[in-house]
Length: 422
Image 1 (cartoon, helix red, strand yellow):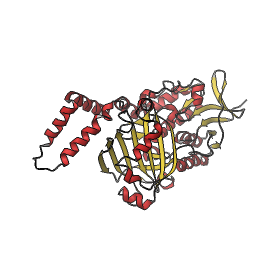
Image 2: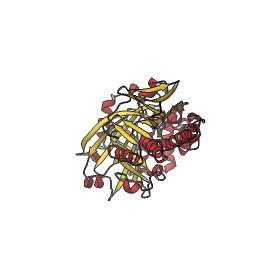
Image 3: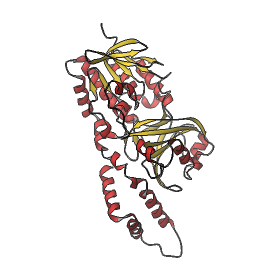
Image 4: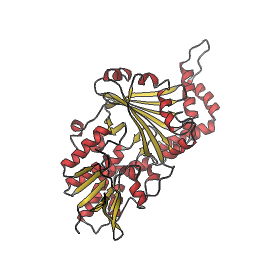
């Protein structure tokens, strides 16, 4: 029997929809299947989208996409239990925006449909259909839909890929839990609290004592009339940490540095999902095979750089490489899909980024980032801003005194290690 489609994509998130859009434009018959009632309905809160990834795909991206605010203010805080040391920078030329996935994902899927792809929502793929030891389609409600290639864009919970042995079973290593919340706050108060005007937006990253002294980070993004707040904590931290995962976000909201910013904000949604943040070490060795291919969080390409979390733009870059490989394979089926995909990834910016930050996940596992550094920064700032009858010592002496408490050899090693990784 002939194939029903050239390509079936499982998942209509950013990676799946981008791949569907590019392949449909190239004239391939594309079906993408979403188990939610609409794309984005299962994506909690929001995040930060770097626009460069879409410039050559959708040139009118800035005028058509449902973006929230352009990020013009960057904040980074090291938290202790009751204090914070914050670095703030204005960045008016930023090419990044806050987005709400429940609005952005349906728009992107509609762009793919306009290019000729077919979208099925509210449909669960029960299994992959296999013929002659290759993936040849999907099974939905007992019906087989056949395709030359099946793309698995399931997200971090890659159940089908794991069930069919295309991905190893998930482990605690390299996997984190994102605990997220969207909070309603009217535009006037939001702009006043975050010192914004018009369409300006702020991104605030937090490190330090969020999950005790175990590795964890947090973020706060401003939307038009809401805030996206969340914690991302490695599963190992949650297993060994001092508090239950369910209490971490509430503790963060009550921190003295955040409480005034969130006052009177009403919770719109709350939830959690897995985040693959292991970087290059988490990317599977086999990214494609006979009739199948992984993209997005199923490919484990999310990058935590230490000061930013790069998920959506990495998904777009991976989807571009996937689309190019699929188009090439359909046109030249004698060249294995796996080889074409490996070549496209190796030549992509995605691979360069994965290589660039390959050592950061190990660095971020150091408890010094969460135990000593926040305290060190706080004490130095207290000395710098203190005024009393005693003569203020020079900065080098302050730093030396606190470094001696920290341990000079350990401090030097941490600084060198951080500079190499970041």
